[in-house]
Image 1 (tube, rainbow over the protein chains, first blue to last red):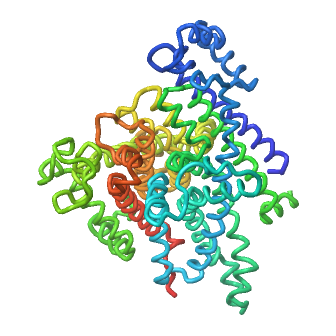
Image 2: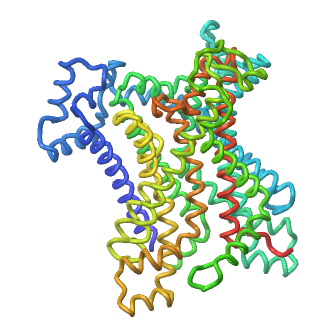
Image 3: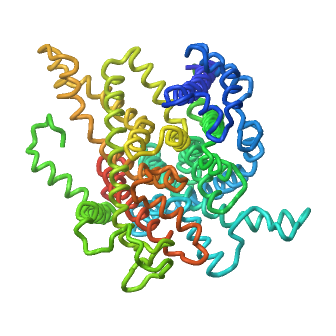
Length: 326
Length: 289
């Protein structure tokens, strides 16, 4: 399969994902018991508003016409309107995405580095006592609910030691600006970022450790060892490089998991990103907003996977080799 | 270990256990899960307080009378944690069962029949792997209501792709083997070959994956309940943590103990799943050296 063919295939897949996400959403609305218009409007909406929604989204028409009007509205960037916030869903979410990404990206990078370092240590002494202890500790950490870990950190560092702020993104009373504001945000983000980093470390650790262990038992590694190559040279030049790609793909595949973890952690820390928005939407049954968050996270994850796959092909020497020869 | 190898079943179980028990984490996880299962079964007969009784003082810290303290309504946290095992395990095992069944059926059809079946099912599997299950489940639970049966069904029906992938690969390699070919030659129907001969032999690697899915379903349910989307009629650890999070500054025990219960339960399952995966995947097993 050539490079262009692969790219085309992935682009078609991307379209399909977006399409299926939309269809699922459409089915959820239209198969629900009760009036789809009242779902599209949200539970707190007035009668007049529900009627307006019915007209706009064609909800009094047969189902295939509904589907067409639904897809065309969404494709034109109309994800619906939140009655509780009196604002379009897209702009509501767009405002909060950077605030959420600040947590998710920072913590993912930290977790990647820490997870990889631990994995290298573990894999170099594979099946030693240390490796087994660290591996099991990582399994336990992988079992910790993000929101609970956040609460435990609040209990220890916020309530017990009184070291760090536990809620919000800034100190509202201080009204800082400029550099002081940046420092303030940084201090407020320490606990949420630590929580999110901790829950992601096991994900990277596990995949990197297994990948290094598998690479070490590949034929080329055995051949080089028997030919007398220095162990650390072999590790640095060949094994580590070949083992690095799986953890990179994991980032994209786990983005959904990371975002859902981030949303729950934000709620615990009162971080003003998508999590708070979602919690409010769940409590006031603001369905358009919940749907918007589902649509936008799904589409983001699909695009992230797309870009990482493309990057993967560009980075992996083995894939490049087959392309040149074909 | 394979059924068609005609090995004594008891012998193969013993072989398997001998390999499994070398994995200390797996053994600890297994014993701990057995205890948790036992608690879930016998909890009505345990000498503990009524989990819904509000006759005690509110916000009582852990003491000999109330080992885990009492919550904002004066309910005994320990009894509620013990009763919560039922909700978590039901959702975990129920959802994993639904998702394994769906995955096995779709994966084996894709692998066995190939062609268009394979193309369509594989593409759908890839797509479902990428849709963030948590947000989809959340949307469905908020619109359709959150009875435990819905939660089980929805988690199960959104997490099947990993099983489908594994079983498809297994089916692909098994269908060329002689014992399957022999069945075709003697004229067995496709469904007979699939369900009687192929799936039972392909199922081994799925078991480890299914155990891990029980673990992740329990975490998903906890997250849903934390957002107020769990079954309102049941005692759920996630919901207890949410209630406790409001009082974290004064009464840490309300949120702490149910969370600890989640960690112990999910960690046991993850250790079992990991041990099974290691035993079943020789590449990750320890080499002689």
